[in-house]
Amino acid sequence: MNLKKTQLLALAALMSCSTNQYVAYKNPEVAKDKVNRSMANTKVTTDYTKNVQSLTKSIYHSYLYGQTLLEKYDQELDQDPTKALEGNTYSELLSVRTFVDSFEEQISDLYVNLVMVNAIPEYSEEQKTNAREALGRIGSFFKGVRADGSEVPENLRPMVLSNLTEKQTELYGLLRTTYNGLGSEKSMSDAKKVIWTNMTALMASRRDNNQNLSSYEVDSETLRVAVEEASQDQDFKKFQADVKVVSKDIKKVIQELRVGRSTSANVVYPSVGPAGNINGRGFPANTWSITYDDGPGAKTTPTVLTNLKDHGYKATFFVLAQQVLALPTITKSLVDAGMDMASHSYTHAQITKLGPQGRDKEIVQSKAVIESQTGKKVKLFRLPYGAGTGVTAIRQLIAQHDMVHVFWNVDTLDWQDKNPQSILARSLKQMSAYKGGVILFHDIHPQSVIASKLLMDHMKKAGMIVCTVQGVVDQQNKGLASCK
Image 1 (cartoon, rainbow, N blue to C red):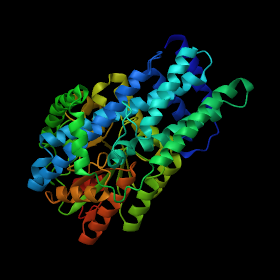
Image 2: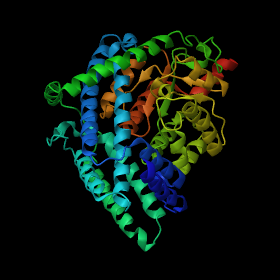
Image 3: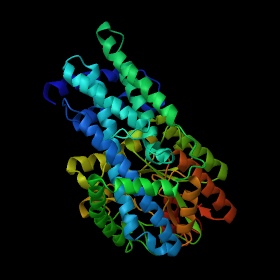
Image 4: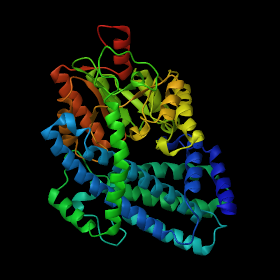
């Protein structure tokens, strides 16, 4: 971004003196890092609207196709749950998630950059005008209006917009930290006014979209009509093709995991081979580990923790280092409750796409940050999307830093599914195929909080043994009678 990037960096640096107490971004360094990353990932131009149109369409298409695959996957589970996890449909679902996460991250980065373009006087009036128009289009999409001006069908809005609604809270916290960091100088008043206006718009949009997901269910006919319409779009067809290409590599990884630790007699230790990867299939009978990825979450993780305490359960939290830094109080509450603290990388980047420096940050630095913040040794690591499990260099880096990789054999798919009841049903179908194993949730989604509590209720009633992943590892490595 040449001169403009330098100016924006200077503005972001002012946040280092912030005293903001907004919980999502209490750590100003985390906010500054996110703003810097957003600037680095977004090109300064006088035509932002094209990028907005492309991203919002891609997000819409992702969830449509993801839901179609989800319904197909559930049908496959009914037929044979032991094969579904290794089939094409599941691989494509994981592929969709890598795309939609990227699209949503890009729209968030773009939003931050557009606000900054409007806030900094050095940008041209033409750039500001275009940035305001693009911000308006993003705001409209947050409210359910698509790039072509048509509305997202009412029944599909929670499916398409729920994750973005959660991200609006994150964006608000980021702007709030920036706003507080600018101080009270008169020269900053115009910039603060711009930031405040966008903060207000974010919260209004989030409030309008904040729906009760406890009984939400996608209407199949509405979905069918929407997919049929989207299928006429060449971009949708290209997206489907791209998903299938990526899914081939993902399927290969999942098939390789079948040769991972498969019997309770195997010893687990940091290794590039089977001993260094847990897939849940070798767990003792009736023994399960509940795991949560991507957190901690400001509004969701405390409730998850309460539910675990109420059931007398301990879970394994695969946390992101950036979230640990942003939410030290919630992180401490997990540690104090005796939860298993493991790493899920620094920023949830797809590590297979990174060079040596990026891999070091996501694997090595994340471990150091989590250990320094929790006072606990990190022994377990989970690659975002499971991507890189079969890459020797990545697995070596994990093993070299004394961590074992953890996959799963029960995927709730709670990032796509917004219905707690169907998340529960999907979990139980998969669990029926195995004697024990690793269950994957994400503690950043409201539906996941509800669904995981429903599963805890079932496990308690059924007398299932619930331990942390490390608890099961210790049981088997040390020949203990129990993982408790």
